[in-house]
Length: 282
Ligand SMILES: Nc1ncnc2c1ncn2[C@@H]1O[C@H](COP(=O)(O)OP(=O)(O)OP(=O)(O)O)[C@@H](O)[C@H]1O
Image (cartoon, rainbow, N blue to C red; front, side):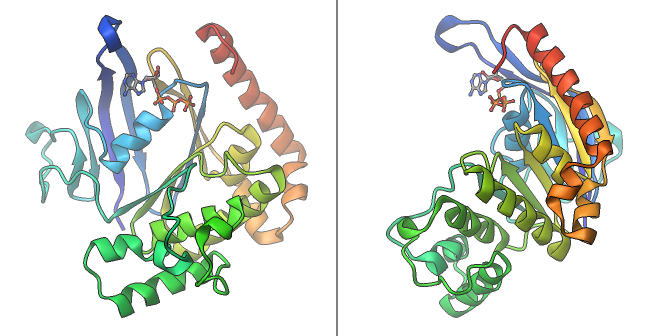
């Protein structure tokens, strides 16, 4: 398993229609270690999605670089740093699976075909791709729904298909951009627990974006808080509430622990301060 390294990264978006350029990220330095569940929280516009898009290899930084193990994901590695990189830039790759808030499933395909779709694009044979997709559909609790059209599924079940699809490549890392943001409160809690089970079972590195402080504290083994204008990482906290849940299986109990509530107030204070300083509450 490989570590993800982000070094001195900044992202400058050119101004739209002659407007000012936006420094979406500035001076980002972070390592994500194998097995970590990193959650990014922060006021709207602080650059969370930009950071995820860099990790996915969808965009390039204006400065700095990102590596996963001995491959470069984005940005030009500086030879002066002494890195001996296998590839120059790999861009999007099978070693990183992405789950979005809108799962972008293909409505004319059934659950199994949707989960196997990425493998089909890579030319994996039908038998193997369906077997691999079936394994991950079982992991997300959809083993009895292979032949269902996806449009007949609830939002939570569709998101389960999206998670299974991202896992079928057996990536090193899952990148999740507000994956539970569109779900009702109860379904959201069920899927929080499911994602922690997937994490425990697969030991994948996770990078997860949310706007919910409670969700962030519950899911993270490390919480990073970002601040806007320019987007940067201002706080990091190691957390263990996810481990407590995986031991006692009682989410309500974890979320009502005095330590959880104290941390929630502290984080809310930090984010509220950023939002007021940034000129708007969202
Ligand atoms: N393609 C783009 N072109 C120009 N500006 C952009 C582009 N994408 C994002 N931005 C700007 O960069 C900043 C960071 O955006 P980003 O979407 O990464 O933030 P975010 O923290 O994910 O926001 P939210 O929580 O609202 O999703 C914002 O000011 C946004 O308007």
